[in-house]
Image 1 (cartoon, rainbow, N blue to C red):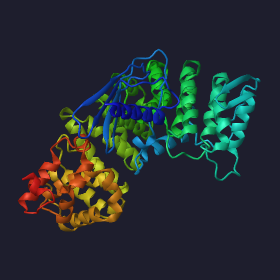
Image 2 (image 1 turned 180 degrees about the vertical axis):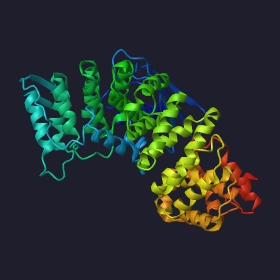
Image 3 (image 1 turned 90 degrees about the horizontal axis):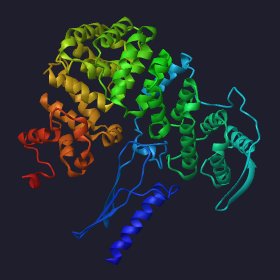
Length: 533
């Protein structure tokens, strides 16, 4: 029993030291350990107030034991997040281009709250008032004025001769700690300067590396505390710096500024409203009633926006998984898109069409049918990805246009190696749903199978195994049964990749079960067929 308690304590201390070492007051709501070979379950209950309305759940497992931790936050009086998870939990290897392109649109249109990637000094001068503090913390002891600390950080950040500049280097340790402790003594413009110069450092391996985490956590808290003292454009500019740092989704500031701007929608200009929706796109999980409220403001401003800005609005709604309910707004979006089909960028069109698919309904069926008919003549003007999403638009309301699907298939076939596996599975779904007969059926499906077998697709399949499963199902609907891929799909080692993913992405059927029935019908024996009976 003493050994069990020792293991429990070691696991708990290890987790705290690794994830939240700078915040020793953090304790966990639930802590549960189960040791192999022992049916007993050990629980530990503690309480901690959290300052963020989100539930966190951590799972870990070793050969000796398992444990599970749940943290249930309380509502805030001040905004503080006591630790952050690394971006590795969120970032995709096949990084989406939509965010970069949307940001570039706002840059080119001269949005006040948007800055191109920082490359040097800001254009305004910060308050040069000399402030000094005495700090003593562990082995750190210094008596420095805030301006000299800030100037040293600016000098090192902007130096071009240090080709191996690493923010985690030990030689920067005291400076970064001093800077983090000095943030409360800086004025608002100096806080923005720190954000600006932090963007000049090379990216770290993760967001939780010790020195980087200390600085950006401190900056995050300080930005939230100063939120109300900034103008609307300054609030958006600070949020934009967090985008450049690739930390938007895990900062408290981003969610705080969304809430603050959501309370003053009537005061926002059209550009500020578009940038707010861009921030919501980065955040992903937002207040859905607020998204509904924004529709009423967008409808009044949509005539002032160009097609690229409409694309950013659609991107915000799509990434937050909120359909647009206002029929007048849908009509306006479709009208503007039709008027710009010959010139619209592929990424903008894809963002608009994906949101239209999420928002379409039977009463608007004729409107969408007209839109698809207009799109057909421009398919070859866009990248295949946009054409695939246009073809997919008719699936929720069963609008079948054979000529459109044929055009999309031919365009995709000519550019197959440049199309992601996700898009290929969507195109196969459109063909399967409408039982579409392709004039180039054999050559197209053979090319799809060859792509799925290509070693170049291995990393993509590992990231999105559900796409392989769905592709095989939709190929089976077309009487195409690639034996080597079916064997791989039924291999137990591959099926472990599907845990927790298949249900999130596939809502129409239990894909793996459907493929197994097809598999057995074709008398192909998988590695686990004996166990499955």
